[in-house]
Amino acid sequence: MAKKQHKVIFLDRDGVINVDPEFINEYMYVTKWEEFRFIPRAKRAIRRLTDNGYSVYIISNQAGIGKGYFTKNDLSDITRKMQAEIGKAGGRIAGAYYCPHRKEEKCACRKPKTGLFKKALKNGKIDFKSTYFIGDNIRDVVAGQAIGCRTILVLSGKTKRADIRGAELEARPDFIKRDLYEAVELVLRRDKIR
Image (tube, helix red, strand yellow):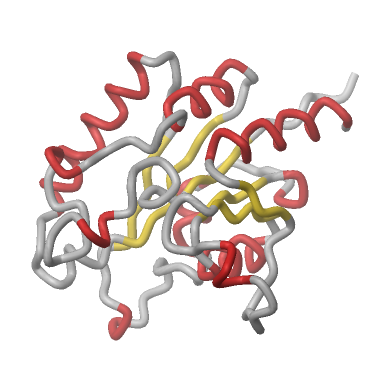
């Protein structure tokens, strides 16, 4: 009997799990836990993934570290508390991987490059063609497509429907959904069909 494929899903953080920090402070980054606000139904969406056997990985650019707005320790504290809240709701994050670099540093991990995906999976082998990356901007779509994932753009963060209607985009997502919960419901429906 063939071994069942390990189910993995990748999520961006800001604008997908938590409210985009654009209007929270002058830095436009979540710099401490008190600034972190879950998007409605996000914890429930992650619980749905956990209940259905998915390993959930966060892949997120956090250049605020490279810019000196907050530290790696601050980010670790935010991540630990976020994971605890998700855990209380019945969900689980398998890992959170962040790029702390500024764009000018031209690192291999800053999305739309694919270094964070590779880091998240280290030794694991997955079928990227049946894996999703859910993000809130076109850079996420480009990154997901570069690694071979299906992509879902959610409209709960940086990108709004008006931004993509008729626009010439660097990449087009496979699907567009209102928020993480709707995106997860789509993934689970399509998973049942396979």
